[in-house]
Amino acid sequence: MKFGLQTGQQDCTYEELRNLWHLADDSGFYWVSIWDHHFESPPAGGQRPTFETVAIMSALALETTNVRVGCLVFSSAYRNPGIVAKAVTTIDHLSNGRVEVGLGAGWHEPEYKAFGINFPRAGVREDMLEEAAQVIRQMLHEGEADFQGEHYQMTHAYNVPPPIQSKIRLWIGGAGEKRTIPAAAKYADAWNGAYVAADVFKRKLSVVAQACESIGRDPATIDNAINLGFYMGVNEKEASEKRNHLPWGPEDPRYHGQILGTSNQAIDQIGKFIEAGAQQINLAMRAPFDIDAVQAFIEQVMPAFKDQ
Image (cartoon, rainbow, N blue to C red; front, side, top):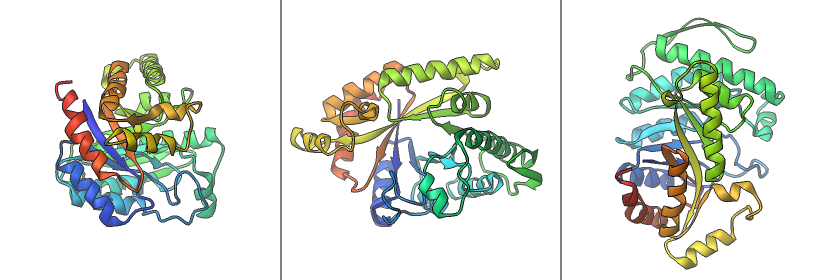
């Protein structure tokens, strides 16, 4: 079992982020990632502090030495995919070969409108995701993109110097069963889901497998991860306080995609996701970062899964 941290770069200082990254890097975490938002998420008027994605991912690469460095996920419409490939390649050099790239169709409409980026209907955003994945794969794995799509056109787009890694793993994130998961089966090395219950995640993995089989791909060749909100408390009192201040109640499906309670309860919850087929669990964290809770997770939860 691999554990990661998804560290949202909002409502915090750079020093707070780097302290969290260093803790993960020194404590056996496999992965640390950031997200791709220009405004705070969920939307709250756009005036809460948020660091830019590519710059903060570069900093993450330089601040760490052990963890895989990722983004879950780059919104396809925010940047030309050739520029994304060049940025990821550069970050691969900064990290000495630890970068991975995640792509998604995007959803945060207020960001699009505020920055003058077109926000088309969902089907068009999915088309853009599929084209972007093809361009980025060409540039990262073949060193050049020649692509003529409806949304992106590339002509002799060279990627020099090449990445350090011979193959940078490409993730596609999102739970959509009609377009996003089939796109992951077709173009990605790994699929990422987020904030769903273990039984829902298990069903989504079956959809991933079916999508792979429909195109003649072995489902065993696509990796997976689940992002779970991290609200574990170091004791019953703190666990109860965190549960009571969640933005969703038990009736909301997202409520069941969180790590809640004490360390023993976290072990039980993670066990259900392992039984469902999860290969990697990313603790999705928002500021203020509870370092004591992360330390408790490292000392009390991670050892329970060291042989799994």
